[in-house]
Amino acid sequence: MSKALLPWLILLLVSAAVSSLLFYLHLPAAFLLGPMAAGITLSLCGATLRIPRPCCLVAQAILGCMIAQTLSPAILGVLAANWPVVLLILFTTLGISGLSGWLLVRYSALPGVTGAWGSSPGGAAAMVAMAHDYGADVRLVAFMQYLRVLFVAGAAALVVRFAMGENAQAMSQQVVWFPPLDAGFLWTLLLTAVAGGIGFLLRIPSGVMLLPMLIGAGLQTGGWLHIELPEWLLVLAYMVLGWSVGLEFSKAIFILALKTLPQILLSIFCMILLCGLMAYGLTRWLGLDFLTAYLATSPGGMDSVAIIAAGSSADMSFIMAMQTLRLFSILLTGPAIARFISRHAPRENPLREAS
Image (tube, rainbow, N blue to C red; front, side):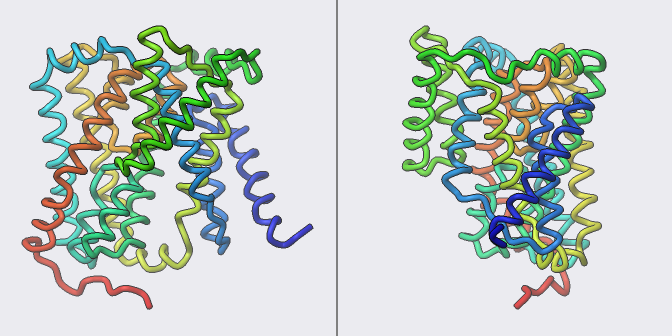
């Protein structure tokens, strides 16, 4: 066997083993978390595998269509009727993000811009791209962002698993891996390619996922399309997305970030806790179930949250509406917050870039 193929085979086997174990334990998003864990393990052991970007884009577009299956126009009325609470959640999330970045810069050796972008709970890929434009160390920003995604996804999956109790086992047993397919599947693939391609060409942040999600929801609501996605295709998309996160970790960046790792982890845990408290507030103010509220306020990544929500009984429409609003609010305010932190947060002995 070629030496070039051996790491990929190991990655596949480890991913399958971990995913099967998590699925046996009825943990939501098992086929996301398993490949994510396998990718991290191999990366920290020195593997230099990377998922081709086109594969990641296709997986995101498929995920967008999956979300579109569950979206309902009625959610717009819910958001409009409760706009003060929605705005409060968004502004609170921005405040938590800014405070987290400020404290990281103040009490760690992270450079100001890097700490600000690394702590922003927006789309991880978008944050890394924007951080590069503003002069941050993209290696550390990527490490912080994907570490956040890892812990947020893990925490959300555990919350969903324990909240669902015995229902989690029932949902796992209801999975039909190879359902019969009709013309709807071909039209869904066409939607994935066209809408995802437009989102990519327009360079909309997370557009490869958002456009299939919005266009697909509109077509399905209007009765023009029945979105059909077999479980085996979704699993492939989940695995690609899990690998794309896990393989972003590397031994070199881990060593570089080791000095500030305790502060980074503390900021992530505090963000998860505070968002959990907001979720509790939503259950009191809007009467939502805790699963929906928790996933709606969970600090990203949006694709991971969507996959976890799909494996639960939560309200996907409300969750994705809140996640999308959070993403764009972070994208709009991120540069200003980063500039403020880098200029005004006191810092000493910033972490120097590795040569």
